[in-house]
Image 1 (cartoon, protein in one colour):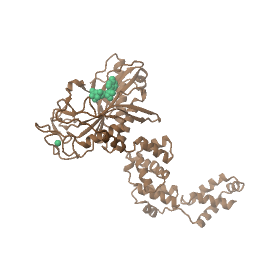
Image 2: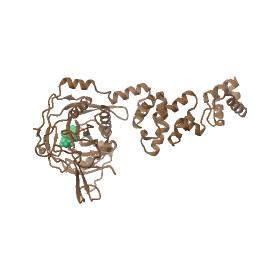
Image 3: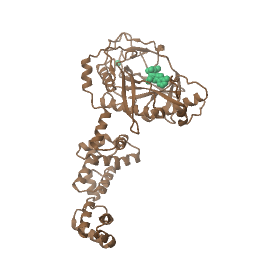
Image 4: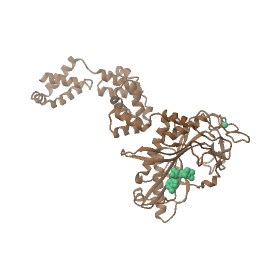
Length: 499
Ligand code: ADP
Ligand code: MG
Ligand code: ZN
């Protein structure tokens, strides 16, 4: 394969405007498949969750999964879409070994939801509105495993195995309108959109939307057009990108590749492409079928879907608080800046903080520990914040000990460290490490007198009314008590002595 010289990103953007289209597939978390009663449970023995319907055997008849339809409507409503009063399924005809029916049951020109939008917040706080073309219902395919080759791809394999357990699991495909006007932030918009969509899906409870488990995957369509030109360029479609970071990288790579081809006087081929995690590149897949090649026609074996307006209104009224609204609410409740909220989000700290507050801690304390000591440990070990060996209840207990005056900040940090190091719960760490604030005034007074005697110059300044100088003496006492004193009390005692 010939390697092209990619155009530097900024240079590409200086000549062209990117246009994107994102197609996201979400696997619903229903108990049974979309058109039969087979289980959707993951991890079962291959081909143990199949029946004549999802195997496409002659004479079998599909029945629509009502929860699948309900989930599709919820997604449509959450994405500000109109909900069709009447729509049908359609057969998308093509042959592929992992699709035993020889067609995919999907929706074509009559999607259940259409004409919506999703607002996404970019890193600099700006809100970008992504227009939604449609959200439609369809079914997943089975899974092929190619055996015997080095890469796991069909090329070089000696044989292939097929597992139809996944065939027929409900999917919702959400397609954006062309995303224009994002300029150099197009890759960031793509990532932010998929991230926000994932949050919405999770909030609705219709899927866990785990990209690492293939429950949510994104096709990134991208084209470039010279500045000032209205007409879109030819797009490429990078398939099955399965992490947020990859969505951003795939868009970035395609911008640079398209620019290279166009600058060279070449033309972009409308094709699907594969994304490669290792180096963030894409390579050509198949030349893209036009829609008519699929010979779509209305599915004759399924009744149309005609959700009553009452049902739709009921579902609308029962929608949960949307992630964006919830984030704004929490940010206001916690009294933090946009940037602080953004870092808490990026760190995956929102749920741990909420759980810690629920366990009795004040919001600022809960946030401080999760975003401080615990986040630092998570970064160091490259693991998720929620996976650290400390529970919200334990963090709340540390906060309670601080509030009681039994620990100061410095000691509390050591307690958190101890819990993270597996030394037990906070009270056990306090006992084992002998961490407790020296609250005995007589012991503190002795330390204060010693500090005054050792720093006569500073003591004189304080006597002269320069109270700011007390900090140095507090520091000396804290050092002498190995940090186990209550700094506020120490300051009181110093001022008492010198006034
Ligand atoms: P297909 O099923 O062939 O992939 P769709 O119309 O379902 O086609 O999806 C294509 C996606 O790409 C949509 O999100 C659409 O908005 C977007 N799109 C269409 N034309 C272009 C283009 N020239 N450049 C970038 N995106 C495009
Ligand atoms: Mg597509
Ligand atoms: Zn089945």
